[in-house]
Image (cartoon, rainbow, N blue to C red; front, side, top):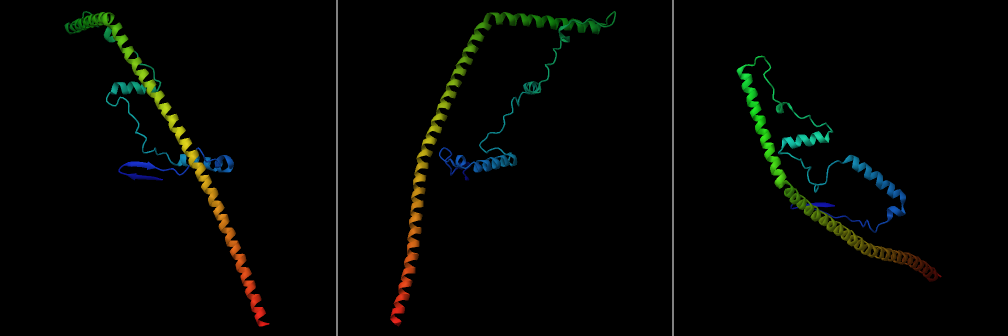
Length: 216
């Protein structure tokens, strides 16, 4: 049974799965339950309201989103465009001024690119090792905190399940005792009713006998 109050879903289950063993006692019941579960799973594909919606990765970054889709579809990585790293000469002989101007601009761009790469490599050689060490330290610290949180969550889950099992065992024994007592009381009531019926029959017989004696 589920009720919705102030957008909060409260679920109450009237079963004790750790204590009830009807499915083990009666195999045909287990077979019926499995058939019903299979039918419900096929009929209903809606998720539980508490399940969060699916997360769309890299929704604000089309390049990363496209790369993720490429990896998911097992498409090969596109080949690098090496044309921009070459120094093409004018195609005509002799080249026009416009073609030579384009070739010179391209050469300047390539030269500046190589200078930036050289500077980046020098900076990486000077400061890269420490940056990697700091990043590795942060990652290891994050991993340790995550593993610790996972262990605590597992321990909490085990403790919750243990508490649920103990509570259901205790309540199950109480329910069994109450059910036994209820059966005994019902049996006593039936016995009393049968005794009353027998007494009524005896009283009626005695009344008839008294009437017969009075006539005599």
